[in-house]
Length: 403
Image 1: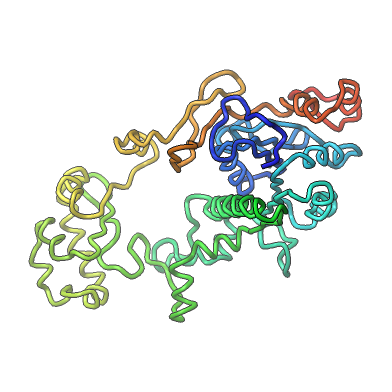
Image 2: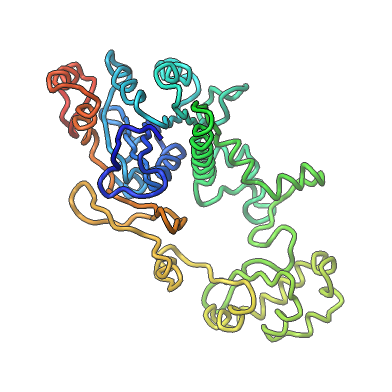
């Protein structure tokens, strides 16, 4: 891989050590991709406008988690000279990641063809709301819009209560993760071809792909899936039951008879209404009512003691309870980094373990423009050049330090 450095950055490890990524992303989907690349060892240089604002959150908890492991440059790409700095970065980069609306990159002169002219090995990665072409290509897009247009809100929530959004930014994180996969595949292909390529996805494409089960029920079976609340769309019983002190998700799947014995109602397995899959599906409401009465008689922990080793099940936890759970603690899902104000904070680690080249979180979020001077120096700019760029308002070298 032909990054800027012959030697890896101090503290860096992972399969992408030596890969240089130029990051001009904003909001969530693009930064999700870049965060994954950086955790895997890539050297990421984030290029953001001076006083980047709400689309580049770095000061709150969300920004601290999204933008760790990056070096920060503040460059005004709309000013004369700003694009020239970016091009110098791209000349030595392996990957360029952006999530502007499709026309913006052409207006700024940083579209794939323009950047390949200076670096034909560049992997150019894009996320948009709705795709690079088509009647909606120029529209702005955010997660909830994609959830609605991709079908997710039509199958989420209780039946008959109208559309419900998922509680997480699922199309953002899906698009970011799919783009990461595309970038890795393109880097692998480049080893054979010697050429970069354009890798792109959108919130809408990724959201529809994540519909998976419900999508193919329409494509193959002609069935329009609806809302089933906390119950599984097709498997009965599988869902959420109130207990004496909370809620429990239960999925007996293929062992209904044993399940009924374990919960203390073996007769339910012999009831003609529940005797087989077809019967249970036809009488879902009655079975749910019967099991609901049973589960309310014990606390969630008691039911876990009864079912946990035999049947898929688990409590419904609030986020503070999640991180107190003994299995979550064993998985060690967080890492400590230093916030720009000097105090340690915990962020989420990359959730995949690589035995030989582990992912690392090497640094917390950087102050805006904190590495502008360092990176420019690495690119061959002199002190006089840097002073001139600052004076012209093209760059910021430290937060609030703009000529």
